[in-house]
Image 1 (cartoon, one colour):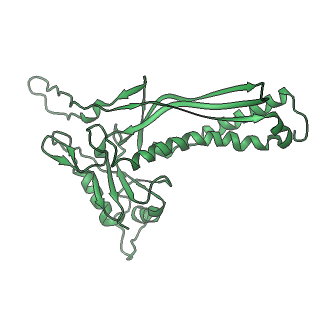
Image 2 (cartoon, helix red, strand yellow; image 1 turned 30 degrees about the vertical axis):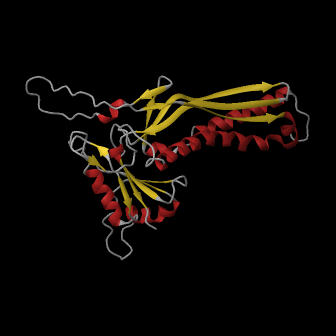
Image 3 (spheres, one colour; image 1 turned 135 degrees about the vertical axis):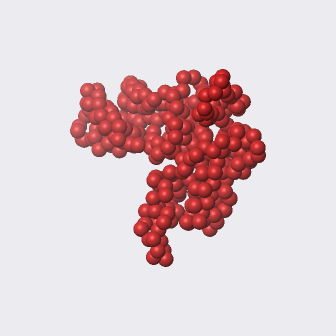
Amino acid sequence: MAGHTLDRSGLDDAAQTAKALYRSRAGNIKPKWSEFAMTIPSKGAQTNYNWLANHPKVEEWIGDRNVRQLKAYSYSIANRHWENSIKLQRTEIEDDGLGIVRPRAEGLADSVPMHQDELMFALLAAGWTTACFDGQNFYSATHPTATGTQDNDLGADELDSTGLRLAIQTMASFTDFYGNPLNILPDTLVVGPSRWGNAKDLLLADRNAAGATNTDKGCLSKLVMSPLITDTAWHVLYTGGAVRPFIFQERQKVREREWYNEENDEWRFGVDARYNVGYGMWPYAVRVTITT
C-alpha cells in the first residue's frame, strides 16, 4: 500500500485493521488495581457509600431481632468522563502503509487500563491527606470508634521482618466501630520498584539473609509492584472479603466511537468511559513509611 494513491475504500480497510488490532489487545490487558480493589457498578452521577461503616455480626436469636441502626456517615464518589482517540490520515497510509496502524491501535488499547492504574495508585499515595467514609484521612491515627481511636498509619519502619509483622499484627487487632473484632488477616503487599527485592525476599525466599529459615515466607499471598507507587511508603492490604480497601466505580464501560472527517480526509477512532476511584474499608489497609 505504501507508495500508492489510496481511495476511500483503502482508508476504510485500514480503519477495520486498526479496530481489529485494538479489540484483540484490549481483551488481554489486565490492570493491576484488580488485585486489591473492588468494582462497584454505578447508576448515576455519583454513588453513596454510607454502608461502609456498618458490618453487624451474627448473634444468637433470643427474643426480638436486634435490628442495628446504621452508623450515620456520608461518603460518595462522583463519576468522571474519560476519552482517548487516534486518527489515520489518508496521506500517512499512502506514504507509510499499515506500519503506523498497529502501534496506534494497540497503544489506544493499553491506555485505558494504564489510566485506571494511574488513578488507583494515586489514590493510595493520597491516602494520608484525603478523607474516607469516617471523615478521617484514609491512613490516619485517629479513626473513631465507640471507645476510642484506631491507627492504620504506622509511621516509619523498614520493609523487613519486623516491619511486616507489625503491619500484620496491627491489622489483625482492628475492630468495628462498636469494638467487635473484625477477624481479618492481610493477604497483599503493595510496593514501589525500590522495595521489590525486599518484598520478594520476605515473601518468597526459603532462607533469610543470615541463612536461617525464612519464617515470613508465604505470610502474604499476593505481591503487587508498580512504578506508580512512591519509594516513601509500602502498603499491607486485606482483599479477601466481600468489601475491599479501594473502590473502582464504573458508570459506563469502555465504548468505541468512529467517524470519518471529510474535511481533513482522515478516519478517527476513539474510546470513552465513565468511572472513578475511591476509598473502601480503611481497616483493610495499613500504610508504613520507609525510614531510608
